[in-house]
Length: 363
Image (cartoon, rainbow, N blue to C red; front, side):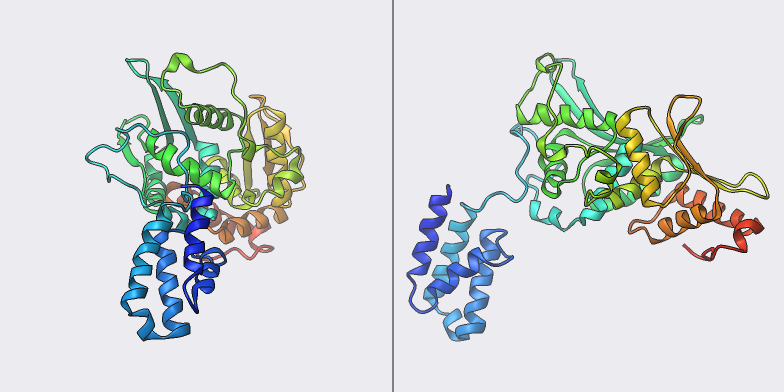
């Protein structure tokens, strides 16, 4: 139903003697405008607390209460609108038939920012063709099997996706996978709702393509055009300062550096912390923004593979890294955590750092 329909319903409610106008005000000017049920419950609560318990229990009010639930549920806009149109066969028998999307709004945006950073570093959005020419889309995060606990943590918070383990002797790994329906119905709408987006070139091009396919309801692989536009909510900043000003950047950095950082302490004299990224102007601005955020003074340079890289080893820079990791809202998990703890342990054995830095005993 349209906004006109909602107006008609609320006008009817306003006609109720004594407290009708208050009911309309409660609908439109409280934080409970989530669903018809939630709104009606709060209407009844206000009647109970402001007017009288007997009035709240009366048959007339109960009828209003039931009517409000049904009417408002039909006009309130979806909390997380699906991107495009879902296939009628999207939810199979072994998957819950309907997702209560309001539950996903309880996922902290800080976690989603961290997750997008991790995907930017270690994830992949694949668009492929089935044997019949239909489009398949999956988001995959692949980590070493030692980092399985990181994927289990992500799965426990999102309550979406599945984890697959590959015990290859040469390269054992674990993968967290979101399918097309989960991306279209929950994960992408969540990112759009919070205005969180990917920052690296590869992930952005993959995301833009997937969004274009969803928004235009493209079903066949051979119908995908060669060029797609960037969604308006995810335009990149022009420079490193613009990245720093993104509301989600600080938590994004936690996930991104988790996937790409390389702490080392190979000698008895110097420890280092390395970050590198592919060769493009946008990626250079990302590294520059990270340097500013962590107060690194070293210059960005290109390594032998033509990637942008920053390597720090000064006392102040190492101290900033420790403070950043220890104060991050999302903690390292699995093998990444072990790497960090071993690095901290080595720092205690290097006088250059141990005598100048307050190295934490616990993480």
